Length: 547
Image (cartoon, rainbow, N blue to C red; front, side, top):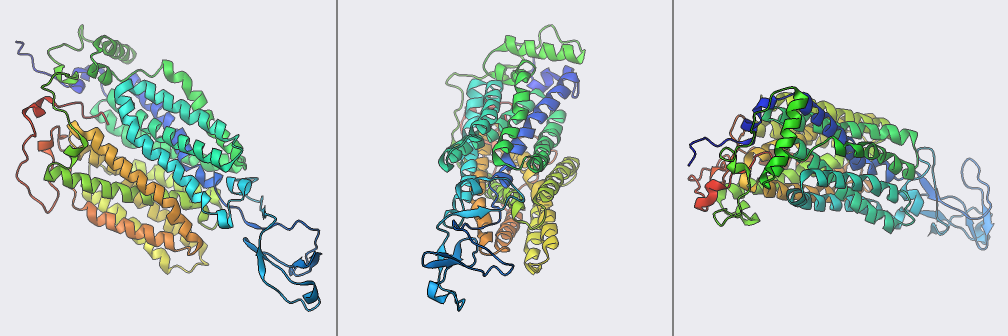
């Protein structure tokens, strides 16, 4: 029996360094891939916006400045209209100018083309009694995001990081091209679902692929800086394209351009060597590491992955291997508390983040400028979060950020509705808080959930967050009845999430838990040290960056 000490992947590949040419190339390419995710994730702001509109009249008529001159149409006369109805009066009442009842917009609507040449709302008359179809369309996108969050990890574990990354990239690229040819609202909705599935699956696959090829130092910079900022850049490019391309069909076509340009990188981006080792494909993993060493101009050992050094990196299939299920997320008190908190906080944060982002078009003012400012705020927040992540306690950071967001949104209630600029200022300043919290929750729950159930735990939390995003379009729709109501809902949820987050334990400078018995207890609760569920728990340590 060999006495050689086993090593983890980071120790074995430490000779590559942190920021060599190979690592920088991977960070740049995979960060650029998220630009399309940011663009696609927020494109609904412009594609589904509702232009100003009024009832269409299919007869010849004249209108003076006061909109009261009349023209006959059988026994009814149009004398004015609003967005969902028009006035009528009888022939006998014409001379007196007396108004009768209103009637629905029987001949359809006329939509303003001042801001857009067309949106799906003007394309299929999604107003008045059909107005519910607009938030439903957005929710279907997030249903696709929910399912993508749930299944992408499984497919990535089974078929490999690289194939899933490029398949979902192709799905996210070609689906908008087909969606731009939609001939009905139903066809658009089905393709919107597929677009959401591809968007989140590609985003997660790029995060996993990059994290597994980088050292711990570079991994943190990639996740919080490169990956997140790439998403923000895509979000910032969206209003620029939308300003230049005013029609929804060509805007969707434009969203496919980055994906088409990125497909050739199949021959540059390698498979995850960690995943190859897990599958026992040692020779392929060594070839990738040697190619990286050559690019970094460093000397690789004669044998990189020695069998007696990396047994734990390879997936055991014997009976001694402990099998974990979703029940293990709630089996022990500590894990149960962490799982419940992750679901609550992730749901609230996702709902508020996407709610404020998608509500951009409902803020009075220049929608293109407001959307761009919102994106720039996100980018700045991601950079600041990266700088503060190891200087402030994680629970304090999340609580402060969400509390700040909640207060800013609730203060909007005190602002008179005619002060549109103040509305915009408080909404955008509030978004600073939720953007930073949304960025940091990926870090803290990765550090809280043990390695043996980390994929499942983050999958459950992320799926719960998508439920929040499915609900948020309908919360935004409440603004039709009261402009302030969505902000009250989002502000209240933010403050509740801030209070709950203070129960989280701090994970700064802590070793990642590998086993369920190592799960931390939440603040205010102290349980006895939890024992492993089986002796084979000790064999279940897998790479901590599989997320």
